[in-house]
Amino acid sequence: MQSFMETAMARRSIRRFESRPIEEDKLARILEAARWSPSWANTQCWEIVAVESPETLEKLGAELSPKNPATLAIAKGPLTLAICGEKEKSGYYKGTKSTKFGDWLMFDLGLLTQTICLAAHEEGLGSVIVGSFDHDKVNALLEIPDEYEVVALLPMGYPDHAPSPPKRRELSEFCHKEKFGRKG
Image (cartoon, rainbow, N blue to C red; front, side, top):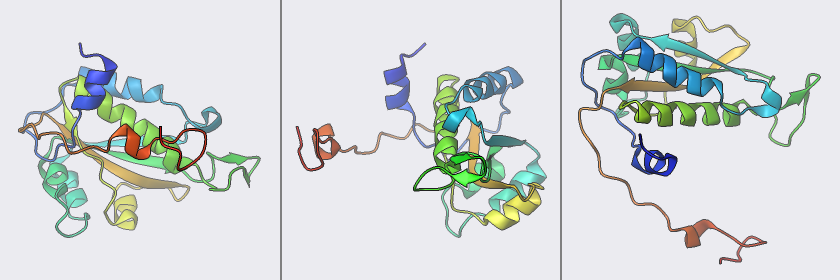
């Protein structure tokens, strides 16, 4: 088993998968890890729709933005998770926004999605986070209630390639000490 640092540094965005299905026990471990993701005041504002039907996957893939490189990952992959958030739950207290940024669901779903991606990588699977698609059409296709929103699509499967790591900024380029602008 890899250390957390090895997992974090080795995970890549994968957009091409082998055709073999994901074993139920692997998916269960990934979703169990997701269950433990942190969230605003433990609101756990997420819902996940697991899509495996080839017909539905094709329809999901058709809702991506033109030329999106993840289209085939969704349309032809074995599984896509639709990451949904309950609106006005996270970041709210008694129905009132509690932060400058209002609804905190994007932050909570980002934490959840990262946990899923890292857990999938640890299980030998690849994934890519997709945010550019027709949200209204995907909501309708998956019969998402009005109080929820699909925020991301997460195709997942066995990678059919191993991309090299992208260039990363050095710590000295983005870490500040005490105040913004004080690098060190």
